[in-house]
Length: 225
Image: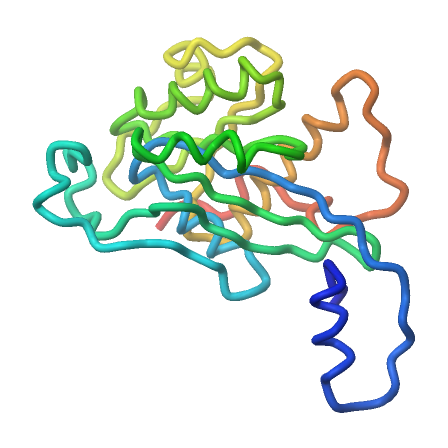
């Protein structure tokens, strides 16, 4: 496994075993995972990360009921109060860092910091509460950050086609809309692959010089159970 920074390299050097050749530190690539409250961001990051994800979840309480309405997501018991963080090693030269944003309005001030240096974003949409993804879409459009919309197909939720979601959200034809199940690694990496393809199609993008672990994934890999 490649190591993403000098701190990781220090950990690598301390691991017992055969002598390891010190090489260049891999380049880090930053992707955001955004969306509304309860859209599945923490689940998505946890499913695709190769490391145990860093999560800042806290239990929901009755005191926050007015600010965090649970209509449509009644089973939700925790919420992210800062960020989720995960990592995917693409190859020996590139490491992908995933940052999941908090969904509640009172934590949106963190988005400005989290989006610094991001290549793009996956906006998770829950068709049971589709309007909750509008703020994330507006945020990235206004800052010129490329994104895709990934419809997280929850059990029991109505299935809408990509074109229906595109029209409801008011997206242009250039923004990809894919389906995914945030619980499944294959489906999550498929959504990330769709974002990478979208980024490569943008003006001024540079084709990849070598294959990565995301290159063969499909945006609709793995149907929801």
